[in-house]
Image 1 (spheres, rainbow, N blue to C red):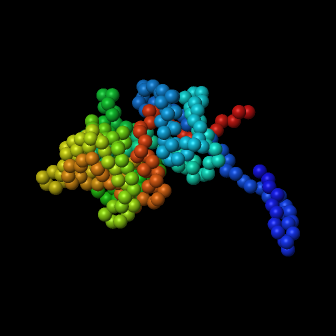
Image 2 (cartoon, rainbow, N blue to C red):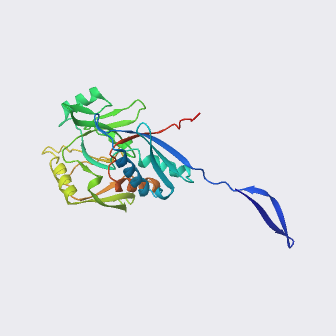
Image 3 (cartoon, rainbow, N blue to C red):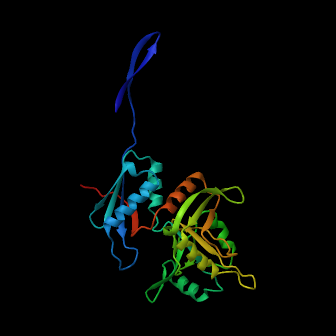
Length: 282
């Protein structure tokens, strides 16, 4: 859009050369929709609804449209999107489940499990058709701290990034159990994220942590707080935990905003692969 700018010089209005006002361009993202389980089905209507909920959580839904394409693909178009908007969308769609709370595999309780998982690395460990454990990327401050403890299973991927082995349990404490999440500060005065679970989530977390208490000889298991598919916190389990918790990690304001949005949303009914290159119509 072009406008003729005018200025006042010695009481006279003088027209200047035409100037151009640049507007942010529309951004288009295309994702391949894949079932989470090997032989699972994908219901595209459910996927679209879940994506719209996530876009609403990061406050871009009013400028975004989502539609299905051929070959199980979806297209997201955001009007007037800045680069920061696109990065936020990528982050919030990069995981299936917002929050998971699991126990990290340790060499005392899970030696055989670890040996089998190492053989299948980096693929999840499936035994007799059931998921038993899987490797998750380590994020934030845990990238440098988790390897200092020899009681958990850690391996580096091809990019030298650490992955931790988490045990699949029957409690399945996830973001679907969250009733409240917000910003707080930890004991060191750093920005942190607080969350509260519903009654069912509190019962499940209590049973999970209660079954993994310190041993009489002082050995401590470690809890894995997984946010957006990354292990963000791995505290030693000292006591049974109920309905409330805090995720600390010296987060930036941007990280805090993104993680709060992530924790507010339910699980995606499918895995989104992408964004994919936009195909030419020529």
